[in-house]
Image 1: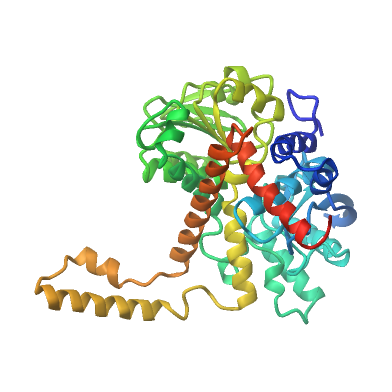
Image 2: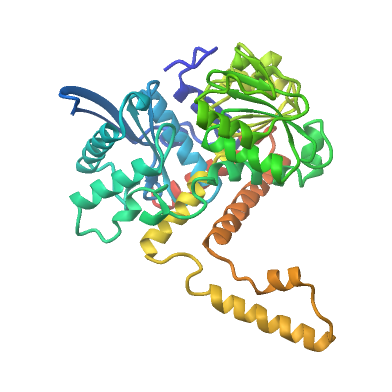
Length: 473
């Protein structure tokens, strides 16, 4: 699949970006090719009877690397899915997991389908059949290959897949670990739905803790008051934009969707727009904003931060020169093509890369997978013990000082962390530490001049070390 505004395929674009890191690391060409090469890809074609008529569906599952097991990556349902896209996304997953120290290999899947054209019952039949094909061919298992939600899929599809695997392998007590992103009542974990969007915000908060990074992007101060344009108000974009607006004081001046864009220089209300989309299935007619029929033109708005959170190749050689944002935060996979990345870097635009920025989803998927294998929710054994310790500390302080501690401080000291608190804490810590590793490479490694190359250097060093340790070369 050729990406817009480029002669490169999506896979080639990812590989070219990785090549900068291989060059900076002076890694042997053969080793580099071994790391870049996709390990295995399967294409399945299967019939399903829909309304008395048999339809044949085509799907793919690609495993890029098994240097760690299981291989991890989402399954997307879309009309643009093809083998090249799946393999490119699988490669990104390998690098992504390494960047944030999640011990998974990279994988990805896709089904060529328009979910909006099928009923819930039809989608259940199609999903179960697709899952069965993957299980029987060894591309779905809690030990070797673990999917998650992606574009066009969500909790319900993951629940159907898990149940299909359970029926095919009733002896596997870890069957819930065969997918992540499940409903909480069926083995999921609180905080997974919001994880990718929240991770994007944690990345931005860490970036703005470093004055030198902010200055490099031509800005100063904190996130408060920064003008933001976001493309895509789906799961990732919605949670990122909502948090940035409500907790960090950002002014979201533009929201880009499939059917156009909404613009308001004074700021948009993200929750109101989301509610409007849910009710009307469109942004057209929303009252408190200017509507632009050509939604992509809003990518060119004068803003501090641009967050592409929709599809790949949205910023390409055709529009890179007119992008005015000082900082681009890639919440989607591959939203900036290799050609556009070169053009933007030459202009001094700072880009925080997708392989790091949107790793919040796989990070919390890792937490969910561990929880499924442990068969116990996080915090169950220690929460009340921690509360009692806090209570005793509070009593000791009040006894020694003979002063009553304010109620809000008492609450903070005594309250034990529940699972959601622990998930968010772990996600925040993961994104912070990964940024610090990337920044250290950027600051100290000769020949590394941008965050994307630095992130790939972090990933490739870990992958290369793993290959070396097990004797692959």
